[in-house]
Length: 279
Length: 157
Image (tube, rainbow over all chains, first blue to last red; front, side, top):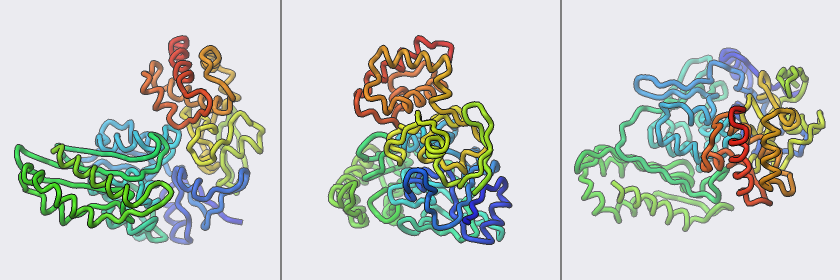
């Protein structure tokens, strides 16, 4: 008999993880579909399930001095309604799934799912979010770009769990987000783009671009961003073609049931160009 | 198996059940509460909507493990309320029901929306219904029905 667990404290959960491999389960809005079974039958998970929903300590969202902290069981709807959630995340979550799903789905789950099309991921990459992992051995803080290592692959040891996500405060002057999907609600992205910049008068002091669903993970180019920092806005716009080319070389979209490579690459680059022109 | 205690339609229940079983299956198969429908089984259609702590949830995506300690209301119990009667009248008068398969889910989504926003704009109604598919009406009559219910039921939500 499989022994699924519903711990009420973090300590209890971490002890169970240290003993044995479990499948960490928060809202379950993706896992229940991935492991779909016939009506009336239990889902076929490969490991005993550890439900995190009863761990009250993880159900929080809190603005701190230099970041927004989102607990691992905080629902996306709670994040959407929280006054200090950055506008970019409100936009992303507002276009994500549907109210019924958002009431259960979590940011931690979207991260752990590590889909290249994960909606919140472009925002988390753009903001340089940090993932807080806990185990009986201690705590690790891992940047989102290091935590997600590939398609559905994450840097999480058997005895660790995500306890919170930290989204640093940013003072961007420009923010852009576009999700291209087949339907407004309940859609998986064909392409997602998020751009942010900080400009003063004529120059750009910070500029970032994150692409979803066109690479094995969300893609940012630190080298290109570093090159653009400090440049005059007019010069960046004059250089638009070569910037687009630099990004086009990095994107590696795939053909699948949702879209194809050519369309994904063309639209992703068009969205980048649109963002740069808007500066 | 796990012991799960929760409230369903106003009654406290304790069940010993595999916690990965869907709430939808528990309602339909174990309790014969078949007002909650299974449409797509993957969260895209909203036919399986129930109230989870008074807010809309897709019961096809909620395992019994996540029901522990919470309050679930299905269309059967909600249909005893005055708010339901207002919604029912509005749905009938606006022609918002054709085949009827999506209707329990639509009513649950409408209740969840009106509790949060008793005077919703059309845009807010559309967001509130964005997780519920209807293949008959084209939605306009459902939106009109919710607009009518908000007006006629003023003060109830």
